[in-house]
Amino acid sequence: GFIAHSDSAWTQSDDAEGSGGFEIGNPFKDGAFSGGGTGCHANTKANGDGFINQLNAKGTFAGQANVNIAENRDCQCNTVFVGYPDCKPWVHSGTPSDGTAGAGTEYNCWDRWIDHWVHYGTGDT
Image (cartoon, rainbow, N blue to C red; front, side, top):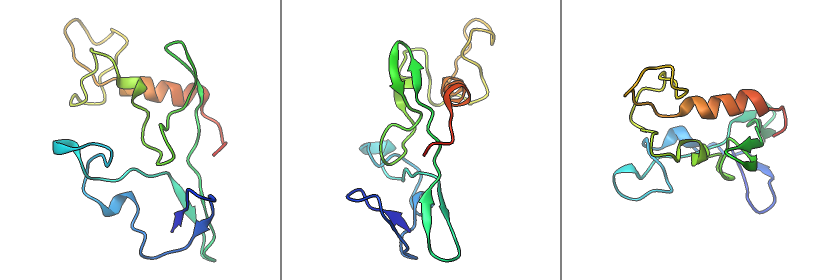
């Protein structure tokens, strides 16, 4: 199913593939990183009703108020958390960005997104 941007109503559809129905990539990028799908976490019920159950985590990050983990209505991960020269998107996610990994270690800043989610995450969708 899908939720229309116009009225936020759920429409049951077996033809709506969701993010998993596309090649890996970002639909908002061109070139080598294009393609793919973003998508909110959704919950469907046997009776055809559905809803978005994507958690919000709105709070302050780097002096900016009301920053959410999702960047847009497609629930794309907010890139504000990795928009720093020291963030390397191709590096393994397990490396912390707090300086404890050792001098010269590269990291992808994913832990900043996770920390924000843990600190500000709510049941609001």
